[in-house]
Image: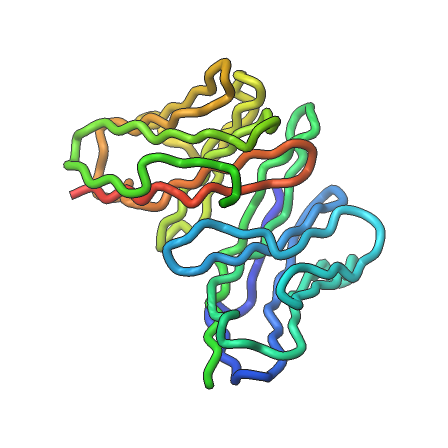
Length: 117
Length: 110
């Protein structure tokens, strides 16, 4: 079974500061990894995903994440936080199903990002 | 608009009742996944349908059931509702290895 651990249920940064949200995964097969963002009272929006190839993945809104197999990590970063980045962020790993090309997601517990002016 | 449509957006019902949540996937997506988001359990995978057939089950209670119709929309049926079933229910659709989530149905059981 796959699992995801997000270190820190709440991260607070100042506007303009570096954002670092940590994610570690457990998987017995090569993983597909995702970061989603959820704004209040909204659904989940995909920020970025790692499937194969380049380990540094760039996403929307200036976010990026690096897949480090040796550390089983997929941390999310953004060089300079904006007030609009305040939201909850979820890391997820996909789990191979029994046949077909579609996969369910296993999510971490989420990290609430607060951006202070 | 993600292209995945969920109705209703909000639902308030009493304990013991039965409700149906509806999801229309993005055009061309054959898979529909249902997830439950609650404060204590986080985001939990419930069930997946692929082109009308159940493909995988997760932490879905026996009181819950789902189906996917020939037009690919899906319904999640929740019966004998309990207070603890209050949660956000999301569906997502996918083709290949990309997922798109709907905006969810917030269920409140009183």
